[in-house]
Length: 301
Image (cartoon, rainbow, N blue to C red; front, side):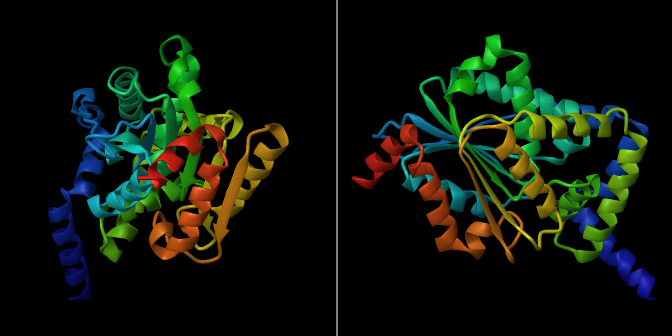
């Protein structure tokens, strides 16, 4: 009887979430399904501070997997109150399950920044959780194609990493489970399915994850960087982040701020520690000379 209840709970949630487990099993045997994440499906919308006022500063927000519109809006409102327009880049399962989809996303986004966003001469990156993976892929594209994207890299004035999913591959699998459902049983089943998927597709997935993680650690953008994290985050091994922080301080010269809470919530530090979060973020941005102008401009309105 208990097993039937468990199966029913999982089955109902999978019906609501699009039969994720079934899809992953299908992907294990047929890569074509996941490769159908067409590059033409990427759509980007800029949220402007005002129709009458023009900002020269843009925040590119790489959202976390499973993020609600309300959660993203809270961060957008914060940045817009400081004078920034905001471009949200959603994170989907297809980006993590098949790296080539993330490469397609990176190409589309960088082309969009080249054209539609060419009027912005100051860019701030805010990458949440596994959204930082998509940004790292963008970094790889900028590094290998400077003739196309070099000026975009030069316009990036600061980076904020928020609740990085880092450590073991299992952390990414846990992140997928958390993003897919709030059902505790599903959150336990999905990482197991993802682990099997990674095992079966290792040459096309794990190999690339390792390369991008190495790129993230060894070749960060040398601009002011802020990291938010907490010690009780199952998706982020804070000791790995401490090692990265120490490594960056030893090897590079860029300004680095690391805010580590004892207790908080993954990709929800703004909600859990609102006053302190806002204070740390605004203090960090105000310490960057090229970003003082939009902040001061907005404060005078």
